[in-house]
Image 1: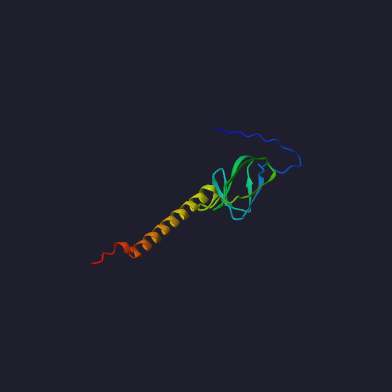
Image 2: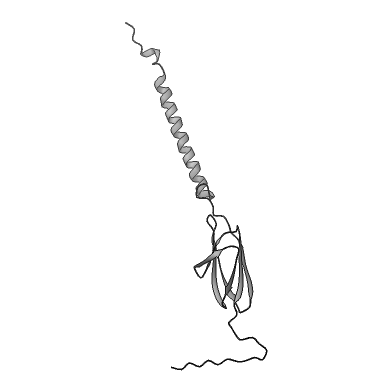
Length: 135
């Protein structure tokens, strides 16, 4: 099978090659993992050369919420993606539910301590004088 390609020749122009776009990706904090269309490509700060098209960019770092955006780039274009990554609430003590859990645990411990002290002191008291039998 014979395949024929037709090129338009422009006088004075260099030979045609598909030009890529340059994408600069930064985050604060630095060192976040970068994924393009769910494929790991490096850590921030990062410069990529991408063919023209639409891409999903994901920036992720341990302890932070993921940042996901979609970009469309054209040949020769320079684009920047920059984000301030938000910290995730900590697992213990984060948000209202975490604080309520901590308060409940402290209250339960306090009740147990008071009960133990109460029963310990109750057993140490001498019997009332009225129960002493005189012969």
